[in-house]
Image 1 (tube, rainbow, N blue to C red):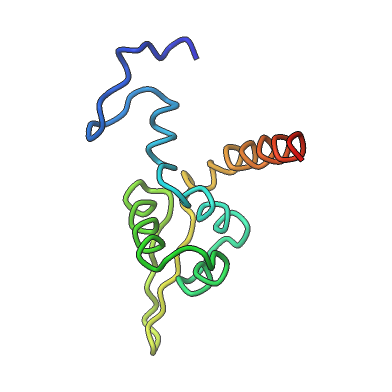
Image 2 (cartoon, rainbow, N blue to C red):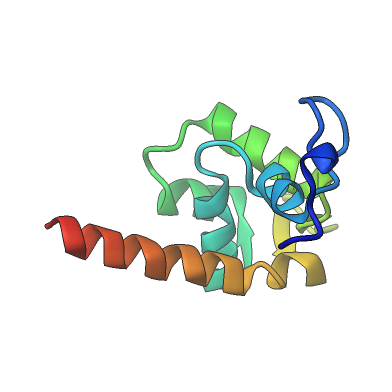
Length: 117
């Protein structure tokens, strides 16, 4: 972690260079890690499956998170040619590589929750 001097931190709107900042930019925003968690649990999902799995998440925020994760290369959007057309979202290799990050978040959160209960 020593290879990330303060000079690597950049203001919002610019491409991050610090590895921790890169990860935070990818997983940034409320709900984003939970959306990624659902992909890790299910592999590929439809919008309605994600919406049902995260009922407290508004349609606007879910749409925004899917666009964000698609834009950062974490997931891909695949539209079927069947009728009616369906859209499935799948993790990319970069998305699957987030599994240990999300798992660590789960473990840390579990320990914190249990310690404060």
